[in-house]
Structures are given as structure tokens and as C-alpha cells.
Length: 404
Image (tube, rainbow, N blue to C red; front, side, top):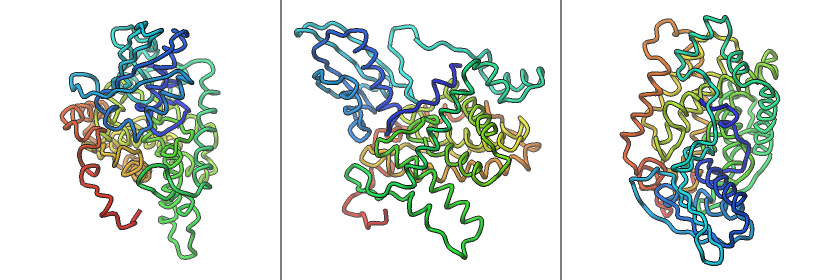
């Protein structure tokens, strides 16, 4: 598995696979071939179908600066769902041609080339990691810090500060999100809507949801967020961590960083053994993975056992199995934003169940990760970030009754 540093990325939304990945790819080529005077970029499959709503072209243009670029689109199901072909020219002569796969979370692979990121983790499954930790009498956070090495504590501090900043900006920014749906930002009103008669349970739900909405609305508007593990699912983990940090005195910064470390480990396992890309495995790979990360982090905040951490993450994925990725009009707004809030609340519930029921469980985390991946492979392409099925298919703007 790769470093968790490649999982948590601070950058502009709204999509890690559709904006961060392609922007990174063209920047790498631009830096290597500095005398090119024109680009032709072909977007395939999910990038072709939802790239406009995901701001793919804008992200690429920003990376290329003032260099002219022509965009083409194509559907070739034999290619990876998020493929782009980058051709660079000088004086009308083709100088470079690179096929790139944007595989989720901002990570890219150049087809036919050796991966520029190298694995650092000696173990590839949770079962292997758990055995190692028990044999060496260490917890999961200790294991992560050992493998990641020097500077990782500071890295996680920066990630935590970026997550908090996205929440603060989101709950204080009113207005309408970009795009034809004209959605009003809901985080500020959710956060402020206090009532003297509000039950404690309702207050928790409202605040957790407001934090998830805040980050997700920042993402949808192209603001700065942290992939956790993706842009589309970026609100889940920060919402749970921030709420618990505010509510409980024992949840100090060190516990938060441990939670981030363990959440990153869970996300890494899913990324390595399955997928965190909605275009590959549907929204279960994004929101389901984020919920698992948040559930594991929540369990870590309160020093639950390794088995309880595993069970919390397993419950979170299991109850997102089959979730489709069907963004309306290709924008990371409906149903994406609301799903972040629901998943944050579900992560807390998953941890609660794990606290009581771990001894009776039958399903391992490794098993449910494998199941999620196979479910994604079996899913029809119209439900995998193409906006051709589900809510994206049935939504009609003329039927909108302003319930949003």
C-alpha cells in the first residue's frame, strides 16, 4: 500500500478524480515538456459524460496556464472509466502523447509507465496488520506512525487544520452553489437553527450534519477541502472528528491525529484492495469508504479495541453496499452533499453498534472490502458517475418544487 500522504490531499473541489487527477497529470507533462505551444486532450467515459459538471476542463486549463487547449470526448468502454489522452504539440508537430487514468482520490497512473508512487506498507490486509500489531503489542495508530515515519505527525496536523478551516468557512458562507440546480447552501442555517426544546439527540444530528454540509458545500463550490478519501465524500470524516472534538474534553488533538491515522489506514486498505472511485465502483466506493474511515476514527477517539475498530468500519461499508453514483446534471451536489451528512451520522451509529456487538460478528473488514469491489464491478455503468441512471436520469428541472 502507498503512503497515507497520497490519500489525504488538500486542494480545490469538486472532484478528486475529475479535477485533481487530470490537473495533476497535465501539470506533470507541462513541467516535463516546457516548450509545447498547444494541447489536445480527449476525455473518455465518465470524464466525458460528467466532466462539465465536475469542472474537469476548468481544472485542466488552470494547470496549463495560458497555453491553448482543445478538448474532445469519446466513449470507449474498454478503457478505464476516468481516462484522458493528453497530446502536446509544438508548431503543429506531435511531441508527446500520454494516456492517463485518474483512479480516485486525485491519484493518477500513466498507462505503460512504472508507477511513480511506491508502496511503503509491508502488509496488505487488515488481518495481516492486526496480527502484526498484536504480536508487537501496538495499536493501529502506532503502526501507522511507525510505517509512515518522520514528519507524518506534522502532516496530519496540517490535514486537521485544513479540515477545520473547510468547516468554519462552510458554516459561515451563505448563498447559492454554482451550476444550473441553483442550490442554496444549507450549512449555515442547519448550524444556527437552535431551539430551546430541541432534544439532545436532535442537536447532535443537526450539528454533525451541518459540519458535513459545510465541507461538502465548500467542495461543490470549488473551495479548498481534504480528500477523505475523495472530494465527493470529503465531508464525512471532518464532521465526525470536529463534532467529537467539540463535545468531549478527552478528544484532544493527539486523539484526533490518531483517529486520522487509523481512518487513513482504513481508506488505504479500501483503495489498495478495491476502489475509492465512484466511476469504478459507484458511490459505495466513495461515501461507503468515507463512512468506514469515520467509524474507525470515532472508535479510535475513545480507545476502543482493534476488533471494535474493525467492526465499526465493516458495518459502515456493509450498509452502503450497492450505493449508486448518480449525480444530477453531473454536479457534485444532488445527492452527494446530503449523502455526506447521512454517512457521518451512520458512522457514529456504526461505532455504537461495534461497541456492543463485536464479539458476535461474522463478517471481517477484508471480506466486506472484497464484496464492495465485486459489487461495483457488477454494477451497470449508468450507475457509476456517468449521470445516465438513477436520480440523474429521473430528475426533471420542471418538476422541481423548490424543496431544495
